[in-house]
Image (tube, rainbow, N blue to C red; front, side):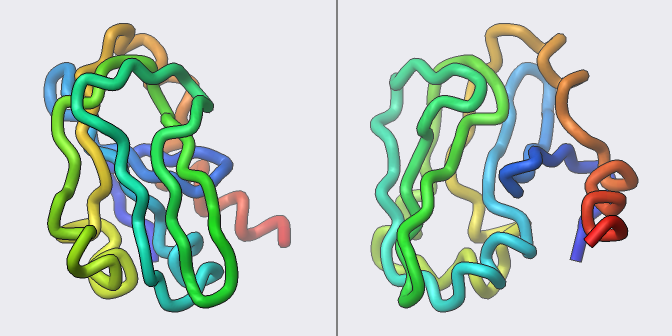
Length: 126
């Protein structure tokens, strides 16, 4: 499932932009590939992040996978619910399974992300 109105990265993160706040999670494709998610290592609020810098780690029964920041900025909020219920990412990756919120320092970086149509094309080539 790919949600219109969100932005995506080639590493399968999704981004919802509201003003200069970006909510970030992993796309449906990524959570399916990982399988049952068992642990999420969240960053500290206040952490400065850069494009493609490590943002979080998601562990599953299959593997551990880094989540990369799609934009530069400061982590303003983390989804603490994932500490007790990491499976929220499997159940609702675009809703309750969000990972972090970032105050974006350069909104122009959004232009480097894919919209839903461009992201869908990644899968057409497979």
